Amino acid sequence: MIVMDVEGRRRTAAGYAVAALLALLALVHLYWATGAAWPAADERGLSLAVLGSVVSFGPVVVLPLAALEGGAAAAVLARARGRGGKVPRLVTAAVAAGMLLRGVIGVVWVVVGKDGAGDVFPWLNALLYTPLCFGFGWAAVRAAR
Image 1 (cartoon, rainbow, N blue to C red):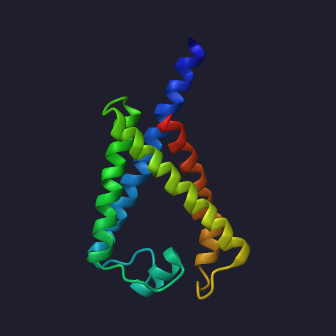
Image 2: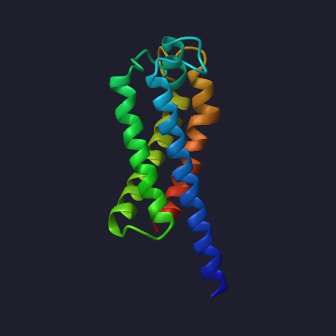
């Protein structure tokens, strides 16, 4: 019985961590929708650092991402709290699959390289984005179970 309780608390903590990350990402995308480019000097630098290529960070692009991340955060939080039934569990599993897939793609980018990625993206991908995707992807797997 004690083992089940510890496992349940770990699953809940994993869900809270994933929900917090998704909420933070939603807030960052909302911030970028205002035209701000932090932590880069401009939108081009931000795009190269975050995605490794030059794409728009305008509201039309980042607001739907913020909404998606916010909705996913709410679903993962509901799952962590044991509420909502099947939908939060499926959303949490989808978040896990997406993060783990991004982690695998990140490893491919590290090994093969990403042409035109600039100087910053390869380092951020190898040292930050890919490890975070694997870590939070695994946490989402735990939360989804």
